[in-house]
Amino acid sequence: MFDLTGFSMKNADNAPIKFLTSMFEAHYPESLGIVIIHNAPWIFSTVWNIIKNWLDPVVVSKIHFTKGYEELNELVDPKFIPSELGGDDDADNTYVHPSVKHTRPARAKDAKYRELRKQRHELQMKFLETTKKWVESTNSEVSSQYLKDKIYLSYQISDNYIALDPYVRNPGIYDRNGTLVLRN
Image 1: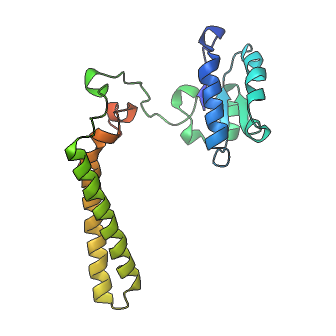
Image 2: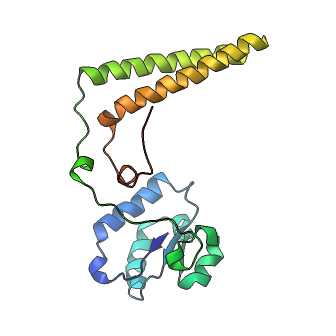
Image 3: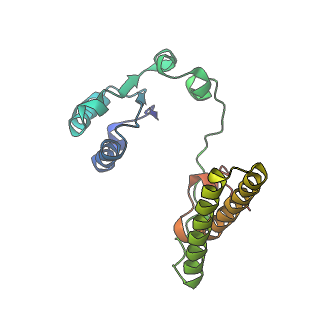
């Protein structure tokens, strides 16, 4: 859902809008359920007439415009509508601006990175091998041990990702607002 309350033409920038629409069309056409454009000002109809020509008609049919809570409620359960739009979801959706801590680039791929990737590959191969043995096992005690081994390996794979994370990902909004906390 895009809440366009307060949107004006000064907010319209065709390049990012065109990029987003091409991303939707190229990568998410089957998985895209609906897009809701909420409280779009009257001027947006002109913008929409340009944008919809960039999209596949199937994607266009999945885009809905709503004004006010009643129209929004026809498409979305009230428990998922933010309270500021009249719904029951009172989650704090405050945008947390990046600090210096959260604007670091990913670490350079050094010897430690290569060792972590090698360990990850080995752990994944062990996990697959253990899964195969677990599935093929006909003895309940042996099967139970393979299951425990799989669980232990999954923790090791998780720990390995936590060590790899600074090399493969820049911090984002979920790091800043505390939704994503990586810990062993």
